[in-house]
Length: 150
Image (cartoon, rainbow, N blue to C red; front, side, top):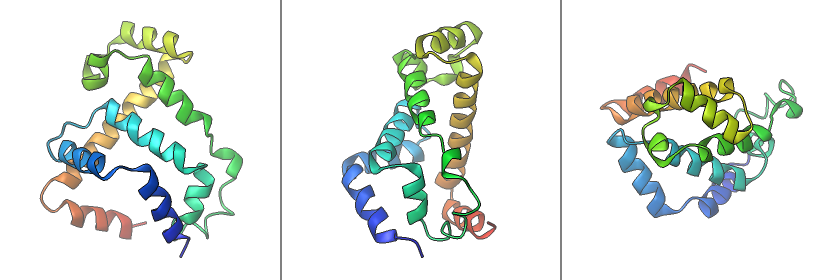
């Protein structure tokens, strides 16, 4: 079953209720931006290592032997933070304006490559699409269907 109670306790200490309600409203209005994504990653990082968090989720205990804890790169969260911090406020709010020259500037500012910036923007776009599905009518059903298919 995992250690769900410990995971919930950790999450409750890191996530503010008011912030969670504001985030829910932003998701429902399709206004989720890179600032929100950054906040979520920072809160997750405060909860502990990704391997520890995964071990508390029900069903992942059987997967523990299938993935190497060394494969979970904690530095990737640091890289994501650096990339987002290298963006202007306008770019964080509207990532669609990020063109090739902006990608190079962001990559140079974060000490990464333009391909890392592209990966982050692709992940963000996927998150936005997924959140749009869940915010739509029947979204909870779509979420449950996705979880049952795994």
